Image 1 (tube, helix red, strand yellow):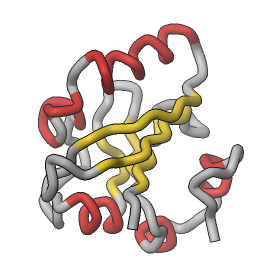
Image 2 (cartoon, helix red, strand yellow):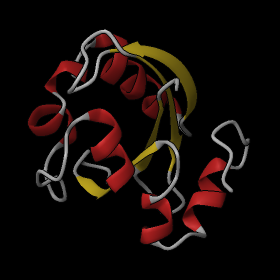
Image 3 (tube, helix red, strand yellow):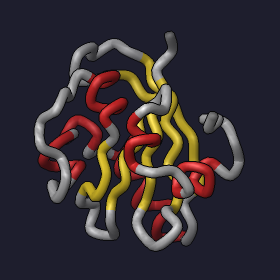
Image 4 (tube, one colour):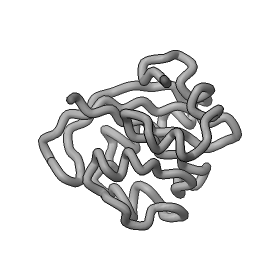
Length: 123
């Protein structure tokens, strides 16, 4: 089982088949350099309340989660990208189905460009 807190989270996830990532107990979203979604796990759709709406190819911060297009979320990512490799964790409040839900967010550089966003919601 992949551990959300593992230092090598990206390496563990990138060894899995997409169907296996879909079954993880936390959400996984992969974005390309232009912040377009290249992978959106079924777990994230289910856990967030986004459901099975189309995600692939859409710009995440404007077409899927504009509520995260602010200094506290996207701003942190942009600043880290400007400095180099992404490896950050922070808390976030809000989800599609529950605007008061607390979420742990890990943002990490993807193996071949782009970024991973992992989202863990308390049980």
